[in-house]
Amino acid sequence: MRLLTSWLASPAPDAAVEIAPSRVSAAMLSSRGGTPAIQSFAVDALPTEAITGSLTSVNILDRASVVASLRTVFDRLERRPARVALIIPDVAAKVSVVRFDRIPARRDDLDQLVRWQMRKAAPFPIEEAAVSYTAGSRTADGGGEFVVVLARRDVVAEYEDVCAAAGAHAGLVDIATFCVINLALTAPRVRAGDWLMVHVRPEYTSIGIVRDGDVIFFRNRPEGDQESLTDVVHQTAMYYQDRLSGEGFRGVLLGGSGRVPDAVEAARRDLEERLGARVDAIDAASAVTLPDMPRTAAAVRDGLAPLAGMLSRTTEMVSA
Image 1 (spheres, rainbow, N blue to C red):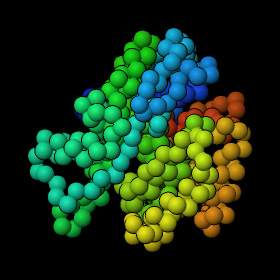
Image 2: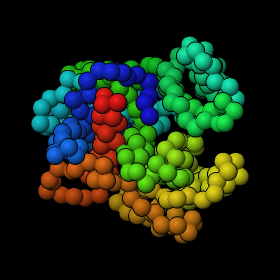
Image 3: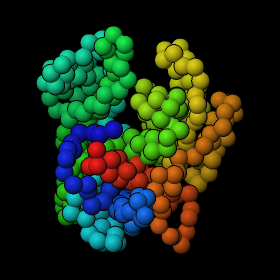
């Protein structure tokens, strides 16, 4: 699932980098016997409030600290990257699933139709938005769904600018949960049937439903929302049954990290109790070989998941 800009047929990026409110992390990919492998990985914590993910206002409040952190991370990789695939917080963009009864044959007409549809949902003038969309499910009568992502151009430019200041060109931009979903979809079993995906971050939680490999539902819940995660998931499950012709989830996947060490484990227990189903972990090791590390804490694997998902996706795009 691509967002905002891409290199199309250009070579794969040297590395994937995630700029999150609490940290900067990056990874490089190689191949071991034909199997994708994380060649090197680095992470650096950011000062409190250096970044505040927002759809409508400035995101990078301490540019110097973010640039310094990026340089530190790049220096720790096996080689310094010149081209990177960039991951930004979910809350810096708005995701919508839109349905059209008839899909225009011309790309320009489809572009205009998507922008017109999103004009009503955008909390800022559509002329200020970068808009990207990915084709989703199709109907027998020629209609179909699209997963549409919009963000303010100047917000995206903030993230691209700090990468450039650190010496790397960001040619592909995506949001964290889409990268995690792409990671999960590398497992063949997840491409069939309906799957519930829950991605927890200290600043937000995103929930997606994937049907036969297509995202059919997406919701972001900022940290501090009055509704609990289990309540939001319960509402999502009801919507899934009532409005999305849901016949039951084939599986539930949970990943990420919360504000406290046991946040994700607590969420897993609550979700299993509420849904009456097993909740499995989203793990980067399911798609790529992880490097040997002195510590294998869950936080390390959670940090690698979006990066591994982005790198796996860009590798597919180049080889396709």
